[in-house]
Structures are given as C-alpha cells and as structure tokens.
Amino acid sequence: MSEKPLQLNIGFNKFKERRNTERLPVDPVLFICSLALLVIGLVMMTSASITAADNNFGNPFYYSERQLLFIFIGIACGYVVWRLPLQTWDTLRPVLLVLGLLLLAIVLIPGVGQTVNGSTRWIRLGSFNVQISEIIKVFIIAFLAGYLSKHREALLKSSRPVILPMIVLSIVASLLLLEPDLGATVVIFATGLSMFLLAGVRLRIFVLLVLVATAAFFLLAYISPYRLIRLTAFTNPWDDPFNSGFQLSQSLIAFGRGEWFGVGLGESVQKLFYLPEAHTDFVFAVIAEELGVIGALVIIALYTLLAWRALFIGRALQKCEQYFAAYIAYGVGCWLVFQAYVNIGVNMGVLPTKGLTLPLMSYGGSSIVMSLIAIALLMRADYELRFQYSETDKERRATC
Image: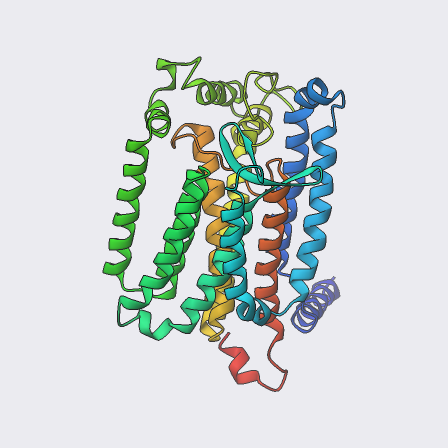
C-alpha cells in the first residue's frame, strides 16, 4: 500500500522534469484559446448563416465553406509569420507603413474600391474582397512597436516622441473616415494609446491624448447625421424598432430568448432574416440565443484569457529587454480583445452600433486571415521569449 504514493510521486517528478526540458514550440494556453474561439466561431457562424446562404446562393453551407477556406489561408499565412524572426518585421516596418497608407488611398479611388452599404472599404481580388482596414491594423502595430522600442527612454522624459506616431495615426484615421469606417478608426486609436501606456509614456500625456481622441470622436459623431443617429439609437432602440433601432432591438430579442442555457444549437429564430448580418457583426447575439448566458460567458472568458496571456508574454519580454517583441505582444492582445469587447458591447446594447467583426469568429476573409496572422505574431513573440537564449545563459534566462 505504501509503494503506490511513492510511484505516483516519482511519475509526477518525471513529468515536471520532462515539461521543463522539452518546451512546446507554442504557448499551450494561447494555442487552446485561439483554437477554441476559431472552432466555436466556425460552428456558430455556420449556424447563423445557413438560412441566408440557402436563400442567396442555394447552398446552405456557402458561407461556412468560404470561411473554412479563409481559415486554411490564415493558418498557412500564420505559419509563415510564425517562422519569421520578429526582427524581420522591425526591419520592414517603414515599408509596411507606407504600403498600408497606399492601400488606404487606393481603396478610395473610384472604380477600384468596392462600395457596400455606402462604405468603400474593399479592394476586389478575383472572387474575394480584401478589407484594407484589417491589414492596416497589423501594420500599425508593427510600426508603433518599432518606434516605441527605439524611443523608449525618451518617452519616459518628454512628450516629443509621441508627436510622430500621433501624426501617423491621424493620417490613418483620416483615410479610414473617408471610407467611412469609424469602428476601425476607434480600434486603431485605442490600440495605439494602449501601446503608449504599456510602453511607459507619462500618465499626464496619456490622459491628455485620451481626452483629445475622445473629444475628436464625439465631434465626428455630432457633425455626421447618420453617426449621431447611431450614437443616440442604442440608448433606447425601442423608440424606433423598425428603423434606427432595428438591429439592436433584434439582437436584444436574441439575448432574451437565450436565457441561461439557450434554445439549442441551430434553433435560433432571430437568424431567420430578423437579425441583419447575423453571421458577421451579430454572430455573438446568435451565440447568446442558442447557447444562452453560459455560452456567452464562455466566449468572454476565452477572450479575457487571451488578453491575459498576451499581456503576460509582453511583460516577460519587457523584463528580458526584448522591447519590440514585447510591444508586438501588447499591441496584438489589445487590438484583438478591444475589438472583441466592442463587438460584444454592440450586440448587448451597451455601445453604439459599429461595423466591427468578432475576431476569429465572425464571417469574413480579411478579418479571419489577419486575426490568425496576429495570433501567429503573438506566438512568435512567445517562441522567441523561451528559445532565444542559450542553455549556458542561465542567469539571464532566470530573470525572464
């Protein structure tokens, strides 16, 4: 009887020793969270799109088949990104920034950019539409990560290093607003400001930047009639449930029907032409209806865990003085989770309606591919954290 605990203890010690010596090439928590969101997203997007796909194309799995193709493309691109050293991104960041600005300008050329629902955000490539705002998010993170790592010490002492990146962000915002795409503008600015804060910019400068950005966005909403309608409609969508409040009121009905445990997978009523964009911007409402509050909380928990892991990796890299990789991790984590929370907030009626997808879950090729590339960047940052030091450099590795 006394030998069994000893055998179990020996086995556990061997497991710990093997775990410490045979490190995985990817962070398991990050990998599992990303895979869970991707798989659940594909299932729920399929459920939300079956009726619309059958009605529009005569194939109930039209959207899910294309989504699966986008996932494969995203994984392939992500693998290439994961194999590239982050130093490559640091070297190419000026080129990426210029390329991103050119793409944002090209999409505004009549006849080149594709207009859908009054917004010109896409460039047509064969049978696919490429949304440039999704690409520029990654390029901006790479640019800011390199700039902040280069001017890290100056940021702690002066406000001057903030001027250039704010000019770049303002140019990007101006081009996005011409499409118009206020949602992407808000996400990019929020990501940039979060990176400033985590890089160590002085608090009073950060607060000033937040106040200026907030005032500018409220001004933009006030001077644009359709934005002002969206801004005010979410406070009480039932005042005009068949016009300005239609999307939100249908989304709230979906939440109400779902209750605690949902009506069951595939049993949503709101996706049957009641809820517009059920498989894109409002897939979370379908999740809440079919899987209930419990299912919705699981999704929120997965995004929260993803954010925690990104910040954990970034902090560890910062301690190892790998600042570019650290700011890449911070930027990717802040972008994906902030956009996810905004999308969830819109679905729940606590934020004005914005045309933002739910990362890794909503239908859309550009969103899926760039989200997977961002996850690959985060995994590469973690990989370099754990494998860039030699076994003999134990003292420095111990600090990480």
